[in-house]
Length: 127
Image 1 (tube, rainbow, N blue to C red):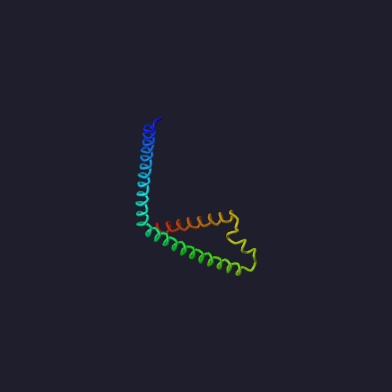
Image 2: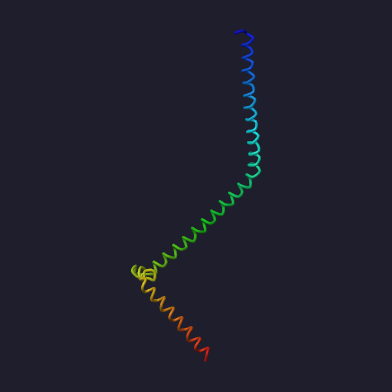
């Protein structure tokens, strides 16, 4: 092989390598340009996002404090009720502990009473 053909092959390889590196640098430049646009967008919107997050955190803290205060108030009320009932059995036999049949009978009696009231009101209105 002669020196001329060797130099020709080496120059073709160098030109190919130069084209590949140039293409890679061009793609890198495009990616960095996209990152720049993305960072500008984030920088424009970030203060508003942070403000919204801070407001949400404040609202969550207030809601949590209010819920805790209401639970504590309810707990104190339950404790007062327990202290007012001298016998523990009375509390367990209260309305919450009534059998379902008794509650159904009370509901039926209430409906019967209501229907009798309506009947007598209509009966008296017609006279």
